[in-house]
Structures are given as structure tokens and as C-alpha cells.
Amino acid sequence: MKKKIKRLGALLLAGTMAASMMVGCGSGAAGGAAPAADGGAAPAADGGAAPAADSSNANIKIGVSIWSSTDVLGSQCKKIVDKAAKANGVEVQYVDQGHVSEQVTASVEQLCAAGCKGIIICNSADSEMTSAINTCTENGVYIAQFFRIISEENSPEVYKTACNSKYYVGAVHEDEVTNGYTLVNLLLEKGDRKIGLEAWTVGDATFQLRWQGYKKAVEEWNAAHADDPATITEPVYANTSSEEGAKAAMSLYNANPGMDALIVAGGGGDPLVGSIGAYANEGLTGKIDVVSTDFLDDLADQLKSGGMFAESGGHFCDPLFAFFLVLNAVKGNYVKDEGTFGYEILFPYLYVSSPDDYANYEKYFVNDDPYTEEEMVEMAGYSFDELSKAASNLSIDDVISRHSN
Image (tube, rainbow, N blue to C red; front, side, top):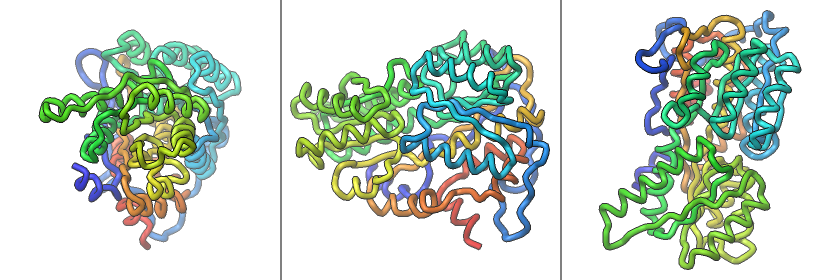
């Protein structure tokens, strides 16, 4: 398993990278997207004249409700959305809500009051979306989720609210179960057997899915290795701060003698920074294998020092595609059928477990952007099928092929 992941480390992976279109409520899926053009969906970068920004976008403002626009992942998200907004002549406004439920719902009210015609949101719990969708519906504002999707199984009433509103556009999210499953298997193949689990907020939909993957990997391992069982703790919650991350990491270590691995489930990067910093202060660097989701700015150094064992990430373009969903909804290009959930895009992850893995990512996603402004103008005019295909195709090889000229 470990060797397989390392060979694929330079690629953006997803357990299933197919994107779904127009998920129906109850029985039956609905259409509503423009038909895809012939050929691939990757933006062209052939050195030709750059397409001009659509002048009809001049009066469009799109709001971004995000946990933080300044931490590691949040700042990457802001950078790519800002670039797309500039390229397409769209105004953007941000509200940082810290994944605090009251602040999440208030952020939507604030952005509607500020004159936004569309909003993209990274909410914390499904329950927050009822208020968010109702507020947008009352104000005629389109809304799409990024890094999140409402669970039809766990939140049927919230899901129904989304279906009943023409202003709920849909969601861009990752295959979080596969993400969690892959990270734990990396630990198990390394030889770790006592795994601590640090999460961010109680009830977060994304964490719940990752947790399913963590537990699935442990259960499968134990079924196949009864003489060499593994354990994973119940989660300790650290919210979204480095200080609480440090406390959670040390609490897990002190309460679980022999713990040899730690999963920091996410939280935008700050809880992870605090956790590995706390272990470094206690001389535990390299003794506790740490895995997480959301790439750190200094991930290459952390992989070299042993501060990190492996990480999944590279998904900061997720809100970029939510931005395009909402922009097209505002312009009347994407119209969902009555009673359907909306548009859904499944976005791939990148897994790295060595400095060499990260070097390729850094070159094509950090030191340079995976999309140029010219490509972003072209993407804004894609049909949904084309946009969905572009998202699922995004990888280091994809960027190289588009930017090699």
C-alpha cells in the first residue's frame, strides 16, 4: 500500500473522481446543465490571445463565507478565488466565521446585506445550512458549498430544504471517506498500531466522513490481522486554533501510553501547526507519526524532520469551482430543475509522504498557480459537464500538459 501511494504521490487522487450532475431528491436525477462541448475539458494554454473578461460581470459581487482567509489553507483558497474574480471582473467579499455555528449563519446574513448576488460557503455542520439557504432564498441570492455537501442520509430535512430552493446551487467537495481510509493505511503499513485522533468541531460533516474512513481502515486491518490489532481513539476536539491543537495533541499522548501515531483530521492547518509544535517541544518529533489533511507551508521541511509522516491536500482549488458554479447561476447559465439537490462536483486529493512527493506539488501548485487568468476566463464559460471534468482532471500532470508551451 505504501509503495503504491508513493508512486502516485505526484498525482491528485480521489477514490472516485467522477463528478455527479444534478442529484435528485428522492427518486430520479434531474438535468439542467448545458451540454458539454466536444473534446476535453482542460483549459487551453496555447499562447493565443487571452479571452477578455465578461463585461456583464461588472455588477456581480460574490461573497465567501470561510472559517479563515488567513490560515494556511484559507489563504490559498482566497488567493485562487481572488485571481478568478479579477480575471472575470467580479467583486468578492470575505467573512471569516471560525466554524462557529452562530457566526456561520450570521456571515450569510452579512453577505446578503452587503449586496452579494451569490455566496460560496464552507460551513461547519449541516444544520447551519437550513438558515443559510433560507436567508439566501429570501434575498434571491445563490449559494453553493465548498469542502462540504449536505448529507441526505444524516440530515434529510436540511437536504430537503436545499432541494426546495432554486437558490441552492450545489456543492464541491472531496471523497473524504477514501481520504481518511488512505491516510490510516499509510500509518498501518508503517507499523503504527495505537492511533490518536484529533478533530476540530463536534458534528462537522467533513470530519464525520473522514472518521468513517479512519475506522474502516482499522476495522479491515484488525479483521485481517487478529494477532496484530490496531486501535484508534475517540476524537479530541481542537476547534481551529494552534493553541487548542497543541493541548489536544498532548492530551491524547498523555492519556494513551504507547501511542505511536496521531491523526489531525483538519481544521485549516492551525491545529496541526500547534500539534506538531507541541510534540517538537517535548522531543517527540519523529517518534509519533503524524498525518493530516490540509498542506502546511513548510510541509517539505516537516517531512524531512519527521514532524509529519504523510498528508493529503492540494485541494485549495475546490472553492474556485464553487465560485464558477455560483457565477454561472447568477448569470442564468446553470439552472437546476425544480426539486433537485443541485450540481455536485467531486474534487481530487493529492497524497504526499516524502520530500520528493511534495517538491512536484510545490513547483506546480505553490510557486505557480495551476490556472492562469486566461484559463479562468475560459473556465467561467464552461458548461457544467466541462467544468466538472476540468475539476476531476486536475493533477500535476494536467498542469504540466497545459503549461508546457
